[in-house]
Length: 227
Image (cartoon, rainbow, N blue to C red; front, side, top):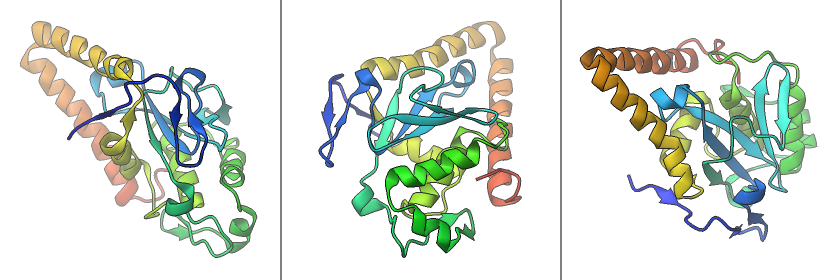
């Protein structure tokens, strides 16, 4: 897979006429990602994500009953995916966004006529949610909003959202690539030197348990992970 990198750290024009500006942390109509301390050092495809308003301000579920606004937890944005709301979303009176396998109530959709209106509903909902890394986390918040926005193909959850970021996320710049992967390389090198195959076995077990948990919680026990 060829990774996409925006080598220019200055403003980047988007189709809507607004600008992506990494220096000011402004990413209009985007899903954004940044590596997590310690966790991403061991498993680099795991990170913290948020979703952005029309003006580019980042929203992220950062803790119990806490949706941060313009204060992205765990550092600057490293990767992003821009959404064309006119072509890829269906926020309208006749929208049929899905919440997992459950359809949102039509009356709620009638009120969510704009991108920011839909995100505001997500904020109101998650401001009263307990945070749990394994059952209700930042991916739950973003997936919830994508389903409300009617982002194709619908049915977003923590697993397919993580895959979307991993496969389609665009790097902000070279520094973001280095910041995301260098700790993993260093930790892995130290682990191999001092632990050898034992380190690799433990790392593989950790990856298996984490990935297995989210796969089971998403597709087998559907009420286990909140969306």
